[in-house]
Length: 529
Length: 81
Image 1 (cartoon, rainbow over the protein chains, first blue to last red):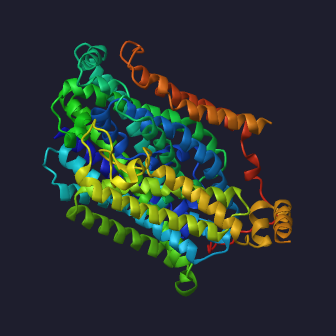
Image 2: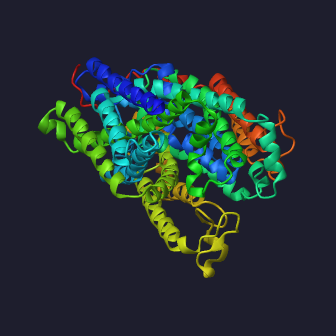
Image 3: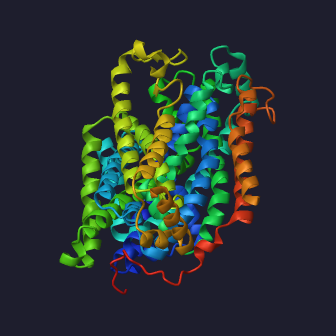
């Protein structure tokens, strides 16, 4: 009973914070969606980190480590330690400057203005929402599952989903970006503390400390692979370094970049980000591996609960409560931003772009944003009740590949003045088409997927190793689909941009300055001649 | 020239992520319990933070914060608060 009381107190605190943020708010859309671009340096770091961390960082990482071993840390965490801060440094900081200078509040608004287009922006909006929605549903499913498990069934799964959904909605509906950021500060501190505390408590309780269970794992032929990467093909491992490119392309991450008060906020963020990932992932992965000798009989489907089981076994009840609050923090930290991000995009990229404020007034933007939050969370709740999580888990993995493959579009918009809307369109269509094809290949190969530890098998014998299936994923010549998706996207942007006329000189001057725009015009004229 | 060496640094650190030499062995166990493959990537995370600190120190895009004379918000549709 103690754990659930701790969690419910924490949820109540979040709802109250949303209420306080509401009292501080002003009734204009930039304040509601971006906290008037006033987020300070430390809050910015804590909030953007919470935006990007989901329950997977705690439960999924330990579960995967239980199944696949220490390689999970290099596969999913350490690659992010380099790539995500680099994207925040090179892309996030420039998005901030462009937003501040030209008033943009979403990526699509920037693309439309940068490439003088309207409907292509709408297409990017649709693709973005389609990729984001499963992520929100998975967050609700995760929240409901955790509340049910922590309360040992006293809180049913539908009620758990409803509690998480209502608290998220209250926080975002009332507080907007300001409420979300305030809560994120609390959330990040909670789950940063969680890893260290869990590691300390479990190590104190384990007979023989850490060394003895590790020796046991190493001495057992069936578990020795958990301490190495012998079952993890190097191409597969390398493919995963492309996935963190998705981070900055998630709309809630990009929108978060617009909210900083000053550019210096990014300085602290990019330096501390890798250390924060280390602080969460290392204890969780290590404890997941240690779970093998402690809890050898967990089924693959139960592995994500390994940390919960270990804490129940080795830690006092109050710590299980802290764990529950930490996990719920991770769920809600990203969920609040996803809901707010989707609402911002709908309001700005559809309602405002197609003339809503002229007809209904500026205040209607904020009202519509809030109504959208209610509708979206209600829809996500309904889907969470009628579906199983596996289909959405898969969709989320696809979404990461899709957002990563959109990164070349953003890079072209920011750094390559010769890029055009047709290049962006070609890349967007490529991303949509490859996602659909990968989904199809995954679907038809489910029945023939090899078991863990077995080699990948060809999906179509005629294609040989060009299209294979391992236990979890489709592979393209041994690499994850994200590799050809990103490279193809870059290729299409380059090719179609070179074949089509660049944006007007005025637009190039707006984004690259007069000197560079002039050089571009000269080059384009020479090429035409 | 400075830009070139910073790109080389990033490329080298990115390449070091693929530590094939640690792939099949858990030994040595760092501190007596941390498999080398895990200890290496924990150190890699610290190295990534150092790389970012170097980038911040030597290549910070401070020009982005300078206001432009002709800058005018074009897409806000905001009334005065």
